[in-house]
Length: 89
Image: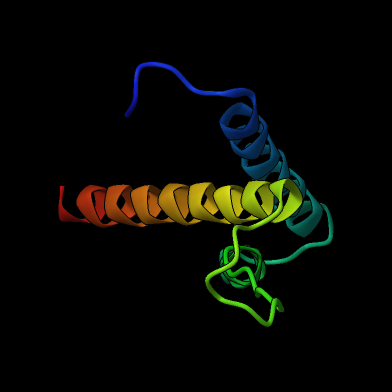
């Protein structure tokens, strides 16, 4: 992990954590399962870029959305790895 983050990176991480908490709580309140949470978050971890020029520099909003999705994927991966490790104990 890098030592310092810029405002956009901090915003993206906060957004990711907020989305994770909202999805988790909404699913639990609604009586959903762990699989429901994972399915919902997997969708949020994928950003679709509809720009026609793939070489163009992304605008700040897309860059933040992409960074948020990257953070969600990292959190999901870490959670899956921890769950697998706990099952081996």
